[in-house]
Image 1: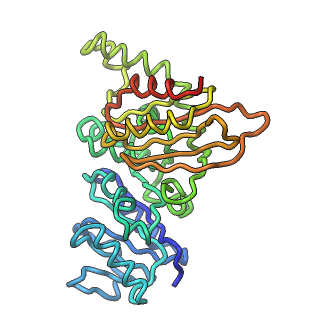
Image 2 (image 1 turned 60 degrees about the vertical axis):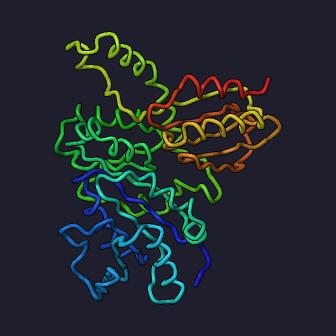
Length: 354
């Protein structure tokens, strides 16, 4: 048995967004990969009716294509450890894990399990968080449920389902709203879960305990967010000045708890100052910091430094050297719940080299 870490994907999304449909598609495809699926609960509809073996006491289901499914009977940590032990003993054969959360779950604690527990961290690599968004009901869900906002904020990739049931203007507004909440997650429209496997698995979107790579989509999306930045500010000013005015209410952007902002600087950071400041804000605001990621220009270092984090957990690594014609500009995106942008930006500016 290979000692390589087992890749894990978290599949999340609010009720009715199409998680199970996408999962069926993944499990039914002839990909030659054996997948262990962990579900918070089976619900009324089993993932697949081609069940070969069902151990009722253990709640583990083995399917005809070699995939296995199990419900979380204790907690996620115990389930992941149990699966890994069975894999080592040769009782279960699987190459990767997909965790389907319940529709009202906050994916944060699920993601943290892979870093907070030494036993799990030594056996699994969290590959990415994939979030499905229901185009028909998304605005209502995002307006009223913080869990739905967190699912968007944590996403490494967003799939929008049921887009054929809304008009083009409504879809464009939703995509803009999602981009404001999470500019680092590429968006894709999906129809009945028809997504190429390469867009679901092995995304390397969440490598805190492996070599970090610069994600070109992150840079592109972040550029897009910057272009719309002034309109975003104007709309929020509008909402504040005429809080309930009908002429403004029609135009202003939704004031979500989960928001993002991008910090840029052409001056290099002073490594010791930056480390101290980031450590401080992570201690204070960590529970509200969903995701943050950056490409940093550090004084005295010829290579890019890439870092990312979730809540209080951060990882960083050296990346490629700066190109001869490439501007040495630091870019950091923060995604969180009511983060004090002014305090964070001031601290970052004070961490720049003199």
